[in-house]
Length: 103
Image (cartoon, rainbow, N blue to C red; front, side):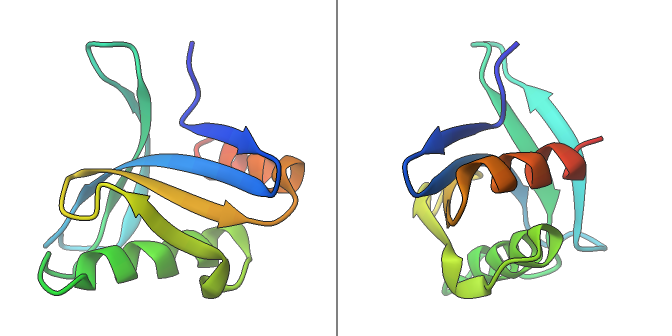
């Protein structure tokens, strides 16, 4: 089973499937696509215009992990539903945090 993140030297890359214009901001667990890749499912109320949904996602993930918003950034998929977030910090601690979010 693949995970929704990859450890890096200075943090983790988190793979997310984002749904904008939702009723609530929330994390809904992990989904696996047909090609076997796993993504954290997230919803935000923000609209996908001028980066608003991406910023809302960054804030929500930072809050869930207890890290500064400045350590979370969308590094791939800026205009796509499937995104890669880079989160800087202690990779092992961040991995534990992500696993805690999806239980």
